Length: 206
Image (cartoon, rainbow, N blue to C red):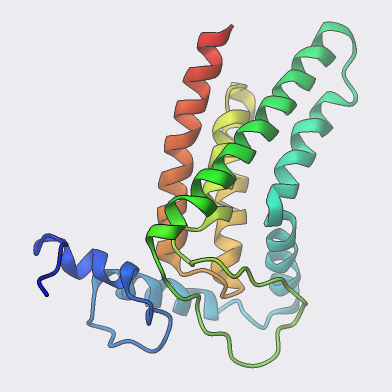
């Protein structure tokens, strides 16, 4: 049966549709696997370092279920008073609502179009970690991180630190070998797009 993927992009897209991706693949098989291998090798220089392990595993746990982003959203509102408190509380609720929509769109929608296996981790992990059962592509944790950064970035002073934290949180899932680098790139693109749509829709309501 002839592939439905256009021949020009088939070498890039097919690995994401392949249920066997995540098992050992020829390094020259695709641009995607080359990217994943290169980033994985780069992280190998840090893996095993106790401080790096603790840092990235902690980020991974905080990023699970978007916990870190909910904490930041409502944490900003707690010390405020008066009208400022009301505004920050509203923004925190908006952030949590948008993250809920993002989770539904990515985990119950986009991920169902793909059947990519997660990276294979050999040996014992330095810290305990939950391994999701959904498709590895795209990374829902990366999409949530960049949606949150887009929402927090409505305050210009928070834009740079928010996106910087999003990069770290998303990258941590590659470090702990639960996502491929290309999963994170895909998730980031989805998150940026969803964040832009959410910001426009919320701006129109005001």
